Length: 117
Image (cartoon, rainbow, N blue to C red; front, side):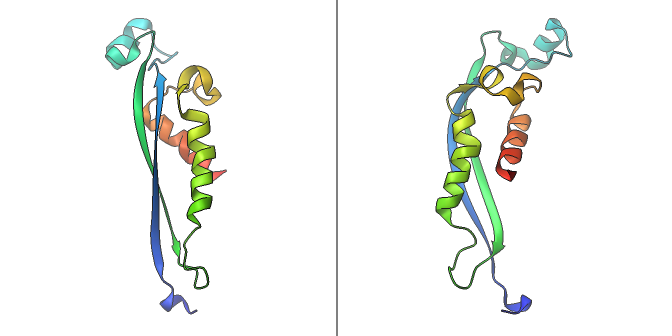
């Protein structure tokens, strides 16, 4: 197939998981953490329901008709997202967050890095 006739597509799959955490930076005092993170700095933590959408873009394989096998993507997401994060205390159960504040942005970075592997 020539490059001009290559067909591109995007394929997305979503998962939801629940986890708890406490937003707290070791670089800040207790007072600064409370001012910055407010109720999210609760010493006992608080929980969220997260929704993650993973989108893969690529050429549609002319033989299989797929960009990627959805079963494979589901397995990758299970391993990279659900197993390490679902129903966990991010700060205590996920080693990555022992030194990184468990903000939504950093959760996204963790997921991206995990999926890259």
